[in-house]
Every structure is written in C-alpha cells, then in structure tokens.
Length: 361
Image 1 (tube, helix red, strand yellow):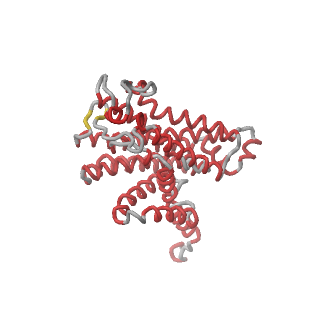
Image 2 (image 1 turned 90 degrees about the vertical axis):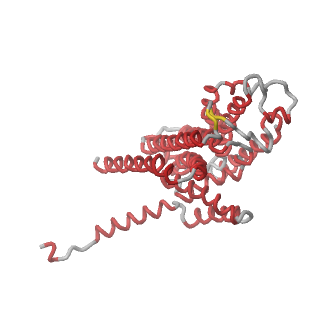
Image 3 (image 1 turned 180 degrees about the vertical axis):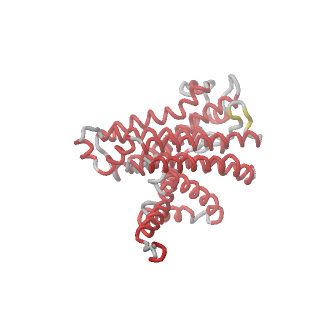
C-alpha cells in the first residue's frame, strides 16, 4: 500500500512539474515563434501517448497512426475553412479548383462546430473500431498488423491527393485564418491555442496512466505476453486489443485536430507513411513502455527533425531511419530504460552495502 501511495505521489508531483513547465516557464522563456513550434511538438507527443498504450503495453506496432491523425486534422480543418469562407461561400480552394456551386454533401455536417469537434475524436475511433474488428478477429498480429496499418496510411494519403476539388489534393487544406471566432494571426490567440494543446496533452497522459494502472492495463500486458493463456482464462484478446487500438486512434485524432490551428495547415504529406513512422520513432527512442519516456522522446525527435533537417535536408531521412533501427536493436526499452537500470543498480548497491563495524556498534 505504501508503495502504491508513493507511486501516486510521484505521479502527481510529475504532473504538477509538467504543468508548471508548460504553462509558466515555457511561455516566459520562449518567443512566440518557438512557442508555436513547441505546440506542434506537443501534438506529436499526444500521438505518442496512444502509441505507448497500444504498442508499449499491448504490443501493437501501429505504423498507421497517420490515418487517425489525418482524420482528426481534416475534420477540424474542414470546419475552419467553412468558417473562414463565411455563410453561403465556398472555401477558397474549391473556388479555384472545383466546379461545384455548393458544398459537397459530406462537407455540410462540418458546418456545425459541435459536430466537427466530436468528429475529430469519434471519427478516428469509429474507423479504428471497424478496422480492429476485422483485423483482430482474424488474429492478425506482429509484422502483418504493422504492414497492414502502414498500407492504410498510404491508401488514405493517395485518396486525399486524388480528390483535389474537395480535399485540396497535394496542397491539402491551407491558409486557415480563424479558430472558432478567434483570429490565428493574433499572437495572443496563438498562445491560447498552445495552452489548449498543453492541457490536452496532460489530460491524455492522465487518461493513459489510469488505463495502464487499472485492471485493464494488466490484462493488456497479459495479452501482449501470452494471448492463449488469456483466452484460456475466459477473456477475448481481440476485444482487449481493440480497446487499446481505438483509444490510441482517438488520441491521434485529437492531436491532428489541434495540430491544424497550431500550424494552419493539414495535407497528405503530414499523414502518410513517413509521418506515421516518425510518430513511432519518437515513442521508441524515448521508451514505448514509459508514458513519460514516449512523450519526451516524441518531443525530442520532432525538435531534432526541425533542427537537423535545416542543416542536412537530404540526409535527415536516413538519419531518422538509422535512429529507429538503433533504438530497436540496441535499446529496445528506449532512453527511459536507462533510468530504470540506474535505479535498479542503486537499489542493489544499497542492499549489498556492508555497514562498517564501528558504525554498527
């Protein structure tokens, strides 16, 4: 009981420290431009939270999180583009590329802000539920699941590119000016978006931690380690994995939705195979089994991409792939595993330490 209380106290202290860092120190220490970049990095960290749950705990190598990130991003961008155009007007790209005189039927529900907000999370979760039922019921797992999820990301990107008149094609939905009545050109409103993203990240971390430490979290680990034993105990491993997959999809969808006002754009280039792999690399480098490690790893990799791609634009992709291979081959637990090893070593040293005779007397 004391151990559990100690862990809970450390967790609350960690959340408090993260809140101070994100809401007090970062806004004071960073310029508006750097704070905007941090908001972008925090969105990738939100995706990493879901990956930590699905892959780190459930063993589901989700190489297609770009699908759900894109669904949430496009759902948000569609509403914002309609709002920017004004009542009765078409979004600017439709006037340029399309021949329609009114919104496509599948755009019209996104005129409602409530529907759009709900769709950013519920639409990715619904798609994940349908895919998960098909995949897990057929007991597809391991590399086959990873390849299939990656193929879905590629398929979505290709489809979006081909629908130029209604999705903006390769360019995507760009030049988003407002966010529910607030102008994104105003630095004050940009900071507001940053605070919303920071709060959403902490909320998702709290939800993920609750799931991981619950009975469901223990069952998810058991399914990862031995599906047949879990099935013998009367549980359906497909349902257990489906919950993790759907929750991770919802987190990715929310991240994509908040990415849109933070950056002002969503396009197929941000949701295809490469971005999906980047999400996984961040979690792997930080430590996919550690919630804090996955978040910090995602932020670090996103920052490194921005910094190093400016200096080595042609070589960054190769460096990124090498980083993923090295992390999985030589440090499968990520950087977070190093901290665990250090703590274990110190604990062993304390237990084996010999007390001097003079002090014992």
